[in-house]
Image 1 (cartoon, rainbow, N blue to C red):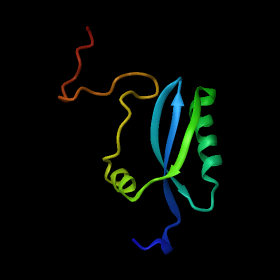
Image 2 (cartoon, rainbow, N blue to C red):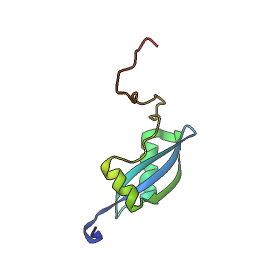
Image 3 (tube, one colour):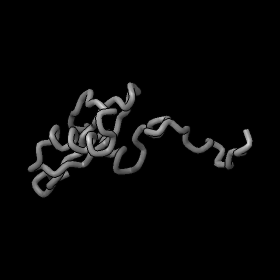
Length: 95
């Protein structure tokens, strides 16, 4: 891929939310300071409940997986509810 036209980069963000390890991908414009951008975004989204663990540029394989939607998903969303069942059937709300 020709890098001369790219105005942004994909970053891997490892952070903790209420003590639980989380990983997400962020696409950040090249002229921005990635660390400051991610810290401000975590503060805006989660307040003091999130702490940045590490920040690094995504590898080519990670970026490809992210763009395809194949990146690893967090098992739980930030509010702690499990995702949908693997079989796609709705859960019985009475359980």
